[in-house]
Amino acid sequence: MVGETEYLAEYVAGAKFDDLPPNVVKKAKESFADAIACGLGGRKTLEGDVLVAMMQDMGGPAEAAVIGDRTRLSFMQAAQVNRVLINILDYDDTLHKAGHVSTLAVPVALAVGERVGASGQDVINAVVLAFEVLKRLRDAIDPTEEVFWSRFEKPNSSMHFGATVVAGKLLRLNAQQMADAFGLTGYVRSTRVRMPDRAKKGMPRWRKVTGGDILIPGLHAVMLAQKGFPGDRGLLDQGSGYQSAIGSDRYAASELIADLGTAYPGTLENGYKFYASCRYLSAVLDGVAAIRSENGIKAEDVDQVMIKAGKWVAENFLIYEPDHMIQAQFSLPYAVAMVLLDEPTGPNWYTENMLMNQRARSLQHKVHAEEDPVATQRFYTESKSPCTVSITLRDGRRFEKYVENPKGDPANPFTEQDHKDKLTSMALWLGMKQDRIGRLWSTLRGLDAVENISELTRLWMV
Image (cartoon, rainbow, N blue to C red; front, side, top):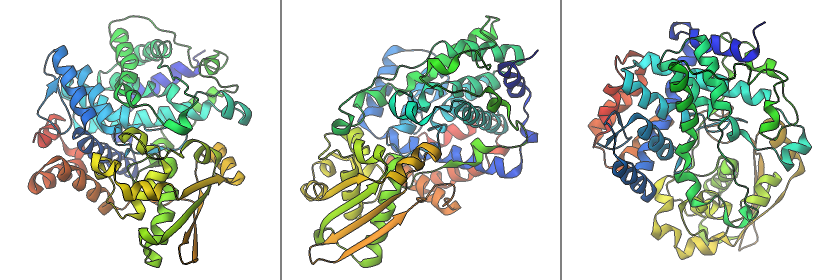
């Protein structure tokens, strides 16, 4: 009897681009374009410079492009670097409960795609499969509320399977090899180090720079399986105990194979960020922006900002006067200050001058948060972060805004112009010329007509 792991592997190995509905293709191209936009912005960072220089020192064949650069690295190195570049600004898309799927799927699609000469359709199909597998895997891993808040490892524990799916599909693994690759991937997972002082310090700087390492297990597993090396073909089956490896107390393997080929919740439910900061802050920032614009508020008029949100936000993001970009991305006071100062979002938020700006630092200490139990419950059940923002002015006036679905959420989606604006602003920040940006945008929107993915990567070699 075929178990859930082999059933899933058979589907991935046999899935065809021609079977994808038009709305799924369109959404996949949007997610691909969003990832490229984030990578272009991420390339012009200290972290990006250091990582590229390190990979160049290591040496290797020039197989695949670095986003926003003329540099070419080995396909493994390029995938690792591009994963970090897409994520480094925390501007990347997010699938509720699953995480930043494009930060794994797109770098691997570019790197392996260049190595094998994949078409745009090949790449889109592989990326869609990664979204669908990771969404179903997260739905299968469904801890009770007590475990979720106490010891669940959160979605990143299984994200490396996204690399397995994309690489395996582009390298044309058959069903048995794909099942082997799943089994091999599952035995090497990234370690998540718990830091009790997160509420004061946020995510450590090193963690994002080493984020490309999450791709290695999947890529290694696929290459081993391609050469006939066996893996555990029942790793994800019901009764295998997979859930215990990632700290969950519940698992329903049937979710892995539910509606395969007929429904595409992973792809269609993906959301985008309007702000370059942790997605859990997006609703708050929408609320602050709405109050500021609707009432003509100036930063110097503000006496206090009070935020009622889920306990995950209220307890972990009150980081005042962050020292560096990565800390600032998880600082609720800092992000609120940027919106009150009407600073354009993106890399501009994280320049040294902005981080040390005294007006911004003064504003941060006017921002406070407390738990809303309803929002806490919705974070567990829906992975949503609704909030209520109240701004009190120095003259005593008070304004309040409730936000449930921030801009970019599937319930409040980006327009085509929003996607184009995001790509354009990041490309301009990097230094690309308008004519080249126009060609890049057109190519991304017509990705399914591209015969070789290298036609795309050549366009950002500034």
